[in-house]
Structure formats: C-alpha cells, structure tokens
Image (tube, rainbow, N blue to C red; front, side, top):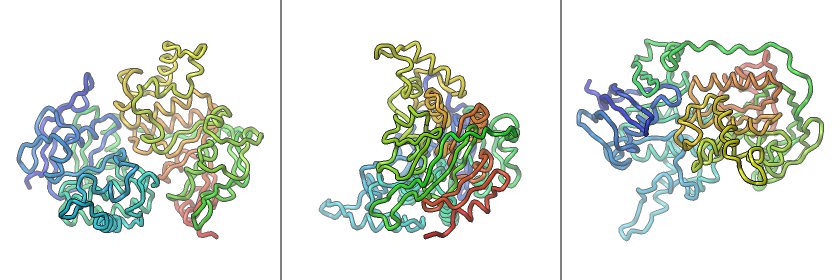
Length: 504
C-alpha cells in the first residue's frame, strides 16, 4: 500500500538546538499511527511541520507521493491535514461556535454573519462528541476538559482525511476519553488517517496500529503495536529500563499540617448550589494525599480554596498547624507556607513573555532583592539551583520559557514553588501532558519531598497515578466527599464507585 505520508530525512534546528535530526518513516492510509517519545524528543516539532505551523525544514515531506512544504496551516488544511494541538489554541473571548469556525465563518450572500447556521453546525459536532456544551458559551467560561473538546470539534469541522492529535486526552475525564475513542473509531471506519501523540501507554495500546518512537530528535524505531509491549516502548523512549518506583515504608509523621472543617464553596445560580459542600479532611506532615474524582467533582476547586484563589470566599474553616486561617488572595496562602501548581500550565502557570530565570524566581523576588532592587546575580543563582534540582533541560536561565518542552516548563513551575519554602504543596494534575520519563522523575521528586517532611495534596485524572503516589486517597463526587481509602485499601474499582456515588 502506498504511504499517505512519507517523511524523508526531516530535520529542524532552532538556533543551536537540533529539535529533529534525519527522521524518516511512513504512514499508511487509514491507520492510527502513534508517535511516542519523552518531552523534547521532537514529536510536536514534527507534527507542526506536517500541519504547516513550521514551514522551513531539512529533508522532504511527501503527501500521497507528491513532495509538499506547507507555508501555513491553511495550506495544510487545504491539503486535508488538520491538527489538534497539545496546548489549547482558542480565543477565550469568543464563543464556542466562533472558535470552531474561526476564519471559515458562515455568511449570507450579502456577507452578513450567519450565526444560527454556525451554532447549528457547532451543536452537531459537539453532539458527535456526546457533550452538551452550548455553542454560544464563551470559551473563557469553560474548564480545560471542555475546551479540549472544542479543539477536537474544531478539527473535525474541517473534515480532513489526515488528523493529527497531539495529546488530545490530556485534560479529559475517563468518560470523555471513552467518548473520544468512539469518535476515533468512527473516523477510522470512514478512512481517516490519524497521527496520535500520547504519553499514555494504555491509550496507545488501545488505539494504535503502529508505533514510532523518537528520542532526542532522532528516529529510533517503528513497530507494529501487536508485536511489542509497553515496557519495550518505554525502553525505546528513554534508552534505559525504568524500574518500578518503590514507595518508602517509613512511618509518616503524625502532626497535622493542614485541616479543613466543613469547607464549602457556593455556586450561585446553579441548581446544585455549591461547588464544594461540607468537606472535612486532615493532611499530615510528610504525607501525599491524593484527591480523586471525575470532571466537575471539585478537585481543582478544593485546591483553589486552600490557596485563596476562588472568586467567592469559601465557607467553613481552614487550619494551618492548628491555627484557623482565611485567605482572600494566593499571596496570603504563600506567606502561610502553601504553594500550588495549577492544572492549566499555559494559562495559569507560565509567563510566556519571560525567561526561564524570571519564571522560576517571580514569586520569591524579595529574597533576591535589596532596597527594592533585584540582584541579578542572586536571582540567577536561585534560578540555577532549581534548574539543577529539577533537572530542567534548557539552554540556560536566559532562554525563553516557551522554548522548553511541556515537561520542562512544569519542572520550572515546581521549582518556582520550591523557592517559596512551602510546608504544603498543592499539585493539580501535575503530570498532564508530561512524558513517561518526566512522570517518573516527578513521582520520585514528590516522594523525596514527602520524605523530607513536606505535606502534599495531589489531584490527577489518572487513577493508576494516584494509586502509585498516594498514601491516602479522598474521593469527591459533585463537590461532596464520598470516600477515603488508605494505600492498602485503594483500588480503581472502589474509587470509581465512590466517584460516581449518587447523593442529595
């Protein structure tokens, strides 16, 4: 069968960095071809070349046997290639429908915008994804998972016969992932070729026909999914075997660092009336406390309450080291020894116009300043300490943060938190969009911090991850605490039963 895409000796440099180097492989019509590798392996760069986001490169790209070099995403779309980006690429001020058809708006013969037609078409696309998102809802009002579904609907609206999916499930719940699988099955039945980037082995081994592995910008191997194993793929990705992480067995300290009593967060105008209701919990020194729940369960809202980052003040009581505290701003929580890594790295975690140094030190400038003047040497030294501690891959502290891979950006954000010397670290889905090697590093980092006495609260949309890292797991369902499990008691089944528990 003649390949629909042939990649021949493709290379791409960004200054001194060789993001891709002599990469060659084929994609056949109608297959789902997974591309895997650690962050920085070159996956996203290659996909941007295929979709016209990056126009200049070495080597040759053939589409159905014909050499092509797209000068824009519009050129690629006209050739039948669409991409769903890992980082959301939406205009938050516009509606869902306006985002889906941006640049391809429906108009009457007089040139007047046909809003009703776009709304109807958007509603049909969203219906295919089994979601009830309103076409007229401003994107800024949607949480990350729903925004990801809008990105998918936008790509589907172009009816492309080659679809690139770059970490499409990174912010989706299990039910939304199952929904996406059904959509993918429909697309494949209709003959659509899919290039699929994911760090999740279970996804790849559920969906892929073939798997291509990149490492350090170079092609490693293409294999049939049926002829390999997750362990073998992980070895190809990192160049070494990943040993299972051994959870330490030392006794956790008994002192309670953080406690909530009957914590509630109102939700005015909603039929339920609350985002969180009557949540009481205790977090001990040196403990990793996992928070499980489906999308909308209140995981993020709980962390935002603890960090003073909610629009409305929460009700109930928050105690730090036994002392009742009330935070109206994150700066107050930080002074009390709480740090938070948000779930949405792009929108809420990064300062895209700043360097690596500036992103790491932005919350601790008072520690590197004298008389209100920042000491550049002290600031650089502080940033470098975290770059080394977090094993950040960067050209240096003066590199722009946007030049780093997603996993290395996340390490910089965690490094920023560490400079504030927190006693409590809140991690909201910290490994979203992070590759398998970086995940293992983050797990080890969490365990190291906990062994040194830090109290950690972590949420994740991946149950196996919570089961791996947590000492205890609390489960939320529609803002209500519905389950608590020790490490020995917790199973995926009992957590899901609690996460879907009906209550009034």
